[in-house]
Image (cartoon, rainbow, N blue to C red; front, top):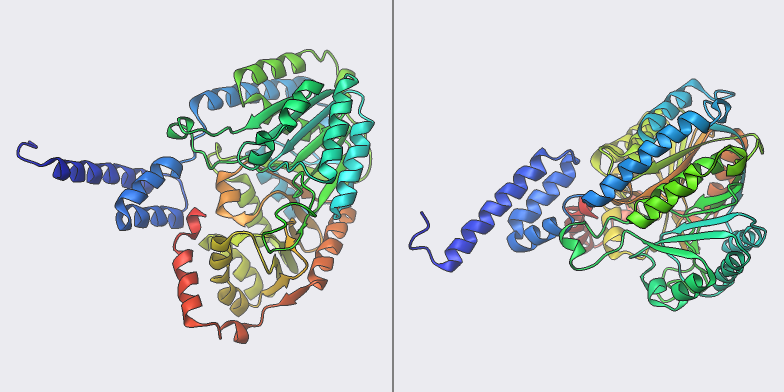
Length: 493
């Protein structure tokens, strides 16, 4: 059949056949239509580069072994919760609007956790205060310190925290540290992992990468979660990586990063602990068996040091990961936007929505909802910055207030709906966060915590300048062209 063909002609035919197979996979995959179209353009506009890129990052492959470990951990947790978790730790209904109760059911069905009441929730927005309180809690630890961060950058005040962690391990506290292999690349190349292990801290790379591994597991799927749990009694989560803003990316020209974390006590800490153990266990078989052995060893609730009622905050843990069929955070966010009746305030460092999300924000504004989007004027990604700008005009046309934060890189991720409901955590407003990264968010239902998040947003707004539509349209034609070109690949960012 191929007799008489040259090697070059044969390679062209094979390449076309491979691209055709990939195109069929793209068309039949459950991805967003915009992302599918983006990949089809890449495959046929840049045949060789598009093929290589798709084989490397086109599908959310976490590996068969990891999938097996994930299934085993989830089966264990289902059984564990059925036997040990008290019913009054969840199913909160008090003083929550029916529309947000229904929204919580969506998040529960897709994310496994229901609302828990009786929590205490303190919001911190100063990096020094965040680290200082973390160190205090680590120094007071009696049983365990569980840390999971996308980035660990061992400079400045982070050194003191790691020293406190080593001291805790030396006095017999079970200390486990999980860091993303890409985000914390510099940390793993430093002397710190060895020092921590020598002190007794268990250190694991999350989603490790390698040249051979890239052939079987997609290397740009990252663990973007940030979490510290101490003694199953205190937990911190939010947008803050384990970095000192005075040192971190100091030469990037974007200013200091501005973040926020919540310090939680109460039943929600138990659920956040479950997220940590799930991520820890699936990294390798040794972690899996050690985790299952540890949890099976708890003969009663008292041995788990489960937290008692600590306050009035109603919170819901929403973890998301690329091994799910749908994005629980994307669906929850869309539901929240369409439930908005009076106001929506969003803070995000990276804004690259797909068409349905952009439409949901526009429609909220068109129907009279007061919509405000706060973003940093400068971000550390040129592509994201250019892609984001292409959405400004339709948003401004719809009546959305766009505010550019001037005091550093605003990295806090929040959504506030009608001053009654909030989303707070690690999720950016882009498809990477929704579909490719492992993320961790809290849905907040109590008025006090929601009000605190609202006040934080207003402080950001006070340090921002609004975008004016007429002046925005006066940009040079070349800038318009560059932005539109970058937007073509925005579903892949």
